[in-house]
Length: 315
View 1 (cartoon, one colour):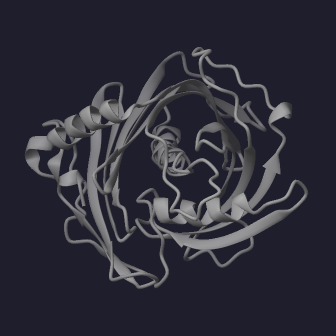
View 2: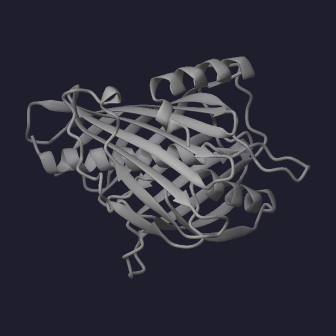
């Protein structure tokens, strides 16, 4: 089995899960000028590999889930994935899985995350990081640490990042703060207008453990042109849909070609209906198949369980 391709999918899922989590933080359009907030919810997505040249590449499919909860003045998020990979020319397959948890404070100045990668049920990597900005529009740092042993599976490999410190440029945004800016721009779009937003964002998913530059192009989408098929028929159809086309660059990338692209369709209720992550040689297509909106009581109970499981997760 090709470990190179398998490792690519580990990296892909960390990136995809963070992006999925991040862009679920849009809130409904409001007439009042208030900070946008996500709807606490649990979403399930079917994931499928799409290759431009499929003869030498893998077939892969799987499921992702996203859970986002507001707890006091923090946003707690948990995303899981399971992807079965089949390589042409091999008779076997393997399943790669990831679990990513993160928390960001309401001010968008503190961000904490852990990432766990597994292959065929065996934990292969476990990392933890904490980022802090000195203030609004200020620079900051990311410190990667070894997680508390009680929260780490005994078979996991602790990536030696405990002494790694990364500087964040002034103006860096964490995911929720970034999305508030995008949402504000989206609310002002007319049917035929587009808007380009360029930001430096840190979410913990970059291969180089650094922030990335995201150039996003926003435009409206007619809800009548998108059919939404979900198992929960009680979910209301969206009143508004937006398209976000993002080009993602590492800070060391000086070319005009992005490292990868992300296209998403999301609603005025902050729900992603479709996402395509494009790496050039292959694309991963994720479509919403099920959705549950949490009540306040649901959110409180789930948040407490998440905090009890990993109390250091709260910034």
